[in-house]
Image (cartoon, rainbow, N blue to C red; front, side, top):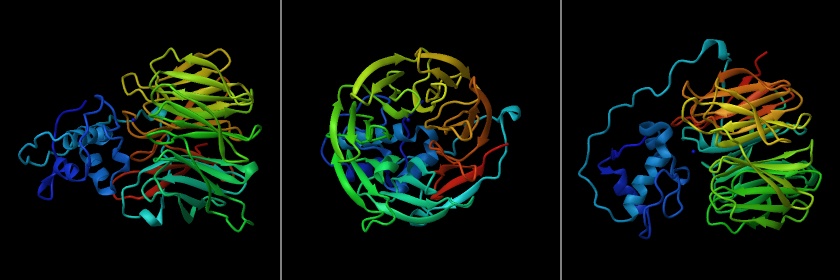
Length: 421
């Protein structure tokens, strides 16, 4: 989202012991390499201190190593004797390529409710008309809101949604922001400033999954929200006017990632990282039209679409070399080009106003970066070094500011930087 079997010795007890005390019922170990434990839990839903501890030792492999420890603990395996604290990990990145990199001044944007904590943040989304940035913050179980009417983001409030949020999207023509939660719920937040219920949860619907409701996108023409339950193989369609589920696609496979509406052809697309595919849906009839094999070892998480060309950038998550991203023709279902200047990331966002794609490449082997693409045909423009865990990305089209998250231990912040010229 290379492993060996460490046990972390912290404060007089192993992490494995601590997990055993908190793990609940007995369970069988989950599949090898999974970042979901056998009882459905994830590192991202644990305490900030536990996340920080595993991230500090394991880096990008923290989630998988936590699952190993947790599965062993809840299945009752014998604990080893206390071990010495492991030596600091060797650097896992290599120097950036100067020709591919633009050094921008990166500004820390504090999030007051989690200041001094280790952030667990997923998707960021901006209401460009209202100049509000929405942040899915699992650390405080809320949607953090920021005023981005100026180049300097200002924290406004956090809307408590009751469970860790993952995906978030703005549905302007129904005056709601939707968020997908760890408990498989989708909530609607009222964003009508003149409403007595403004900035509160006004609707909640359960998708019926056992795991999280994850990423999503909204079709403003048909007023429909497409939500992916990444680990349940479910795609739910929610009527934005009634906040009711009107269609479900089930048994869609593992690691469903980013739905993305394309105003150019009126279709909804969805990346399937586990199957290395892109799905195509017609939201007018809520039918699946195609399942397109990417054909390149990409394993796409993110998806940004230029509606004028029906071409996209796929945010490849594959960490094998050569790490890369690809441009993709949605009409033909074929890769157009491969870019090895950046890779191993997550979210992709396209701004039509700037004609730029932004790729949150948090696991890039040359260091976490925001990869920037643009033009027709799509070309790589530059990388901007970012921060630990900066896998989400949003772009303020008024002030030309890029936003992402900083998930380094005890930072509890976002980052921002101006769009390179």
